Length: 199
Image (tube, rainbow, N blue to C red; front, side, top):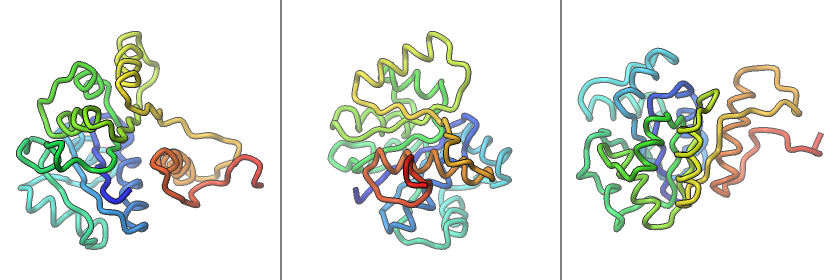
């Protein structure tokens, strides 16, 4: 896994996407980060990170936040001319963390109104890893049917459900458990949580 696309949509839990990018950067992976318009609003509300301005201004903000990594790139979520919108330039894997139910519904219907949805469509058609991290509760029948449709199309559905057998003491440990499970699905080694039977 050399090139991984991380998308943050408008569900609660934007910290999962940010934390995942941090871990991928630590592993010196090439990362593309996309944030939808509603994802920017949630980022600002939940983390105080003001992800606004032009694409170049957001790129500078992103480099500052992630310590200037040269392996990190950003495209505007409405830039359907970005390389990742084409199967010929598809990343190795894509993670949508968090994945809003609106985004999941549009992906399930094959709608590509923005770059996140188009990139997800590319991942499915190219049979590459697409990991969706829904952060919604409770799920209604429409949510479940959309997620099932995506799973049948090849997506991995990985709800943001932290475990408690490792007896977490901080919010960071709860976040790291979910991010660790994402890394497991990407087949990337990590030390973010203690595995069952290791303690």
